[in-house]
Length: 418
Image (cartoon, rainbow, N blue to C red):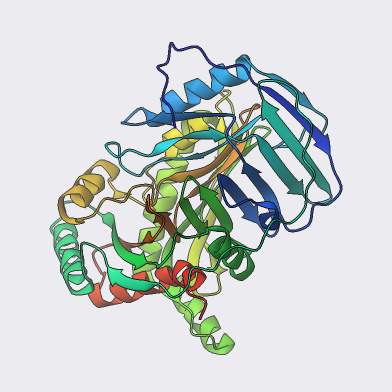
């Protein structure tokens, strides 16, 4: 990505969106290079090529990216026959968890194909009006072979000790909650064709948001924020239990999760942080009195959908800036929790647990938290997988390690279907 300064001239773009017949499997349209994806229950957006891009970093990375996007949309010409969120001029984006890390920014594709229910469209973006390409499934993705998995900089035994240190800090009253992450590294014999794991993630976890931006991919269950014509939704997940595969036993475990004081406490912190962040932007916010249990193929989560109506013309990126990091990925109080993460976690999260998603020219967009995710290395043969767990006073290190293993299953299985 290139990074002009805020005063640098923005290249004017022309975007043209037209309706099309149902294109079929969106992910099957992706080429091997510069593929971008955002798919949920088969609908969503895929793109390829690079009409423009912007890289940002530091504590103001969201604000500088939002400013660049406003300048870009103001200087561009959009011809949109569809008029739905995600049609017209659009950028995909991914942002790092930490202020000091590199790797945040926006990418404007040359081609975007979208589907929303019965509506489907194609957008072509460039310096002038171009013809829409013919759409057809591309070549089958190359399978990655059998990956070799190994612990990252902190092995499982050491990570349990890190969790115990965090529990001790919490019990001493230093903070209420901290989210600690661990890393597993997959080594491949050939560069990864990311389309292969993307297809498996979309197939196995259709209720999650399957994404890929600039080598960062995954299937996130947690919508950080959706902004659609003034309506805001944020899904909060905190409190997790692993599924057994036995339906009757899983129902009993779901009931246990819904009554767990430890998990309800963790969930309350996360919901409160989201509601507090949205309140300055909204005329009203609605927070349900109790969470529901979200059933995924590998785990179950306590979940709450916080909603509101925007009152200050905030864009999706403005809301992302206000929400990140929430207690669901940082802790409570956030400043103290992030400081403790820096002190004891022992790894560079990169984009893990950072926002990933898209924004259109109207400012609408969808941004998930980059969970159940992985980052492909520059040579394509190493993939960093991440998982995180919310630690509170009652957390048991061995249980948290088991929970992290459950959260690694989606991407591990996508890389190694055998």
